[in-house]
Length: 276
Image 1 (spheres, rainbow, N blue to C red):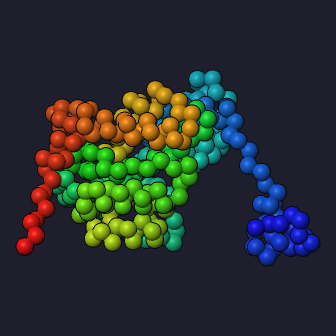
Image 2: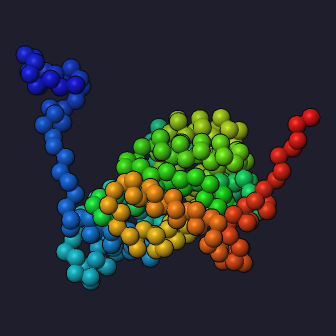
């Protein structure tokens, strides 16, 4: 948009575009190796101690020899999209202008496929840099119905994952998420409405309502991500897709007495009524 060869000064071009002049001259710097190591370790500590905030994580890191301040830990946590889990009104950062939906699963017994789905986003470290992963999880069977890998936290990859799951398996009755802006924005809300599902959000007094997705993230990271160092986004996509195929079809699940999510999902899936 900015033409450095134009006779109009860059300052004036920036004013016309309603952007700061500093933005024009900004050159993004790659994340340092030290910060990448810190982010990787913070992610591991967050899985082990999800209640730990920046102050406690800093103490853990200091004991391990990392020289880091609390503010820097907090900055990296925000970049990774994670925060301490504890009883509070909002489980994730929400957009102040977006709607908040009531939690619909408090007194609901979820016992069949497609009765309720859960979505969440997590940070995935790579050899150099990181990506974000969103998954659509069937609440009853713990089956991963769709997932997407993205280099940004934009809402579009969440919408794509939800639409893929709907296209492949039909619409759920309830879609449950936290209150982060990716799930409360217009595009995601409209996608839920379009399929006829009701939208549900974790709220006050139910900070662990997405616990099944949190358990999924623990499995993904300890059984897949931390054992590998993806050297590209495409490698991360391919490897995670292979892991989810294994997770659904071959990995025994304790909650199902050793049965796989695939077995439980298709066993409890209601048959589609025959056309008249």
